View (cartoon, rainbow, N blue to C red):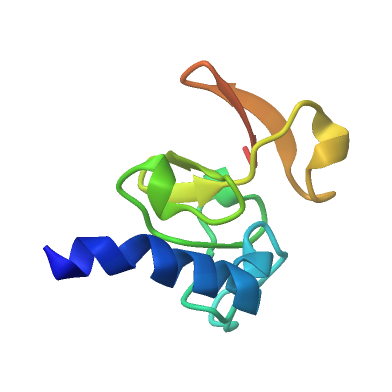
Length: 99
């Protein structure tokens, strides 16, 4: 029970340290993204995108969405996404992703 009480504080402190800035950042296979993220090189991640593994939206930083067990940035249009990703509808939500 004590663990669950500290989880929100831990997540808040992680957000303050800036570990979530990597979400959606351009990367290449084998390149370190930092902050516990990894470089996803599947087509859904464009040419390579720093992201996090997830089981639900609450596992994603930067108010991201969890889709196919990977975190994606939310968007309203292509302008909200990095240049190598597009704003696409997935499961009724708009998220920045490739292919």
